Image (cartoon, rainbow, N blue to C red; front, side):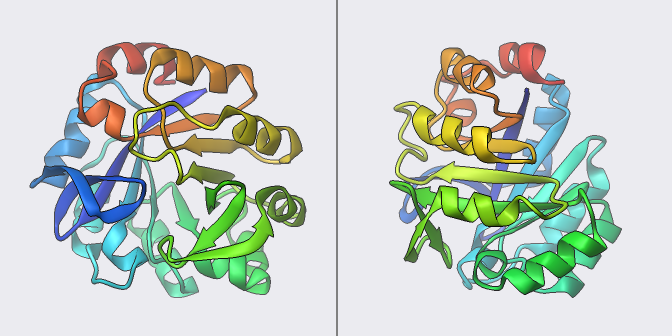
Length: 237
């Protein structure tokens, strides 16, 4: 299993939010490119970059995303507000190893199917989940759809992976939702990445034992709850 540091972009800075709430910003670092380089220096082999402003229609950090892709010597998966095929192509051409799509992919399955066919293995679908229900539009809408139903519908596509974020655990440093992640990993035909609430090495190992392919880690790395050297050494791939 691979551990992937999160680089979440807001107003040109690298931030960490509690529970996906813009009102609860706990970490802010003004130079995202330097932050990304630091994770690479520690030995991580992949980064998870998300434009939070684009995801919530507050603006765009695309220039910073491009700078991160240009400067990075490791694999970078990019998402946040990716709602057009042109932007998917632009990000892949700019050097993204995978592009993460969320709201439109869930709401318009035909669009997602076309993307997966055009870019097999390069599209990751992000499902933000609150108590097993899928949320869209920057966590603003909770759909009457169970995550396992969504996974069943996605299984026929040539996806590069599925990112499941337990929004109800995100940034709270209380551990991840293991039953949720285990159920998704068991049903999915493609690699599943877990996010939300990962706090300890035991959390990461528990996800590995439940069949997860990767884990995206934010708050625990930024606050020092997890030692990046230790994490990268065991799960850097």
